[in-house]
Image (tube, rainbow, N blue to C red; front, top):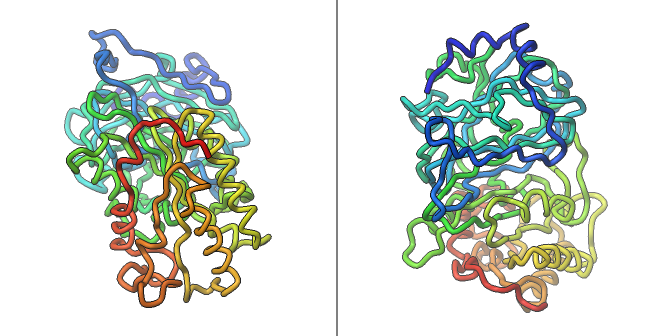
Amino acid sequence: MNKSVGYALLAGLAAVVVLVSTAIFVGVGGNGGGTGSDPHNPNSAAPAVSGQWVGTWSASAAAAEPGTLDGYAGMSIRNVIHTSVGGSSARIQLSNLYGTRPLAITHATIALAAAPNNPTAAAGTMRRLTFGERTSVVIPAGGAITSDPVRLDVPHDADLLVTTYSPAPSGPVTYHPYARQTSYLARGDRAADDAGTAYTEQSPYWRYLTGVDVYSREAKGSVVVIGDSITDGITSTMGANHRWTDFLAERLREEPGAPRLGVLNQGISGNRLLIDGSRYSPNNGPSVLTRLDRDALSRSGVQAVIVEIGLNDMFKTPRQWDPEKLVAGMRKVVKQAHARGLRVTGGTLTPFYGHRGYSARMDQVRQAVNAQIRAGNVYDNVVDFDKALRDPAQPNRLLPEYDSGDHLHPSDEGYKAMARSVNLKHLKGTAPAAL
């Protein structure tokens, strides 16, 4: 569905006029998602009762993008994202969490990419998104919005293009800095363009977009993985979808007997368990305890949570040298998840000998935390990332083939080993453990 000729009229002054007459103002946390039950509307979604909404992709709102005090007025942002599971309809989430002014979106679209890492849409897949059945939306500072559903056959393991156009200055841009995926920008309202020729500016960031859900008759829900740069996949191959969560999604799709779940990556590079980062820091983000409900527990169709966190609490000032405080923070994560009826699988802290931040004292703290995690009195279940990645000949360092080169973050092969170490049975819906 391509209406680029008609919608191009929204650019410039006309966009502002349309905004005034058609925009809706969405409160903090508003979802704006309708059922879209009109089968005669090609942009409507009328899913069968046998399916459900599940998250297929997500990214945490990590910070305000530096140098964007006026946002991206008069520009189209085409985010390229990769699905974990497919479905027959789709909807998106947009965030203005770090904005200081209302964010006006007058044109938003979703389409399948014609090829991986490419801004061109596959023929016949372009869909205009609405919000409360209106084509424009204003998201207040600190707010978020979920679009209405649109009918779109979304494959698993595929690239989607989600494009937003803002006609006016809007304040700092809420973004995710280490996408490991190339997205694109174009001048003017190019949201409905099938061709990618106008998208001449490349970007390593995701902007405003924090989630994509699909209506699925196969997936039974989603597993949310929350963590730091190791979960963010900061050293994975650019554009290859080789984060450990991508390899986990592959296992869940292909292994016999595996629970059919979408995988939502809520990693933030530099993230800590206990302490929030600066709103303008490109690699800290709110702590896991601060963002757990928003980024993990409230996601669409969440069935299980995996946590990988703790090293940055030791690395960053003020350094946390008390393993009991780290363990206590992890138990708070579990308590919050249990209040939602969710089980938590917790990862042991991985080795980092040879990294510039290494010290014997820090490694002792890591080992003390790992001992409690392995003892089974912290999380419902354990995934032993330390054991999966360490060098048997020198257990305080990464196995060389699993080392990206900085002696802290895994290589693609290391990320694959992390995914292999997850017991998929732990992700099936069962009652939380009594810890």
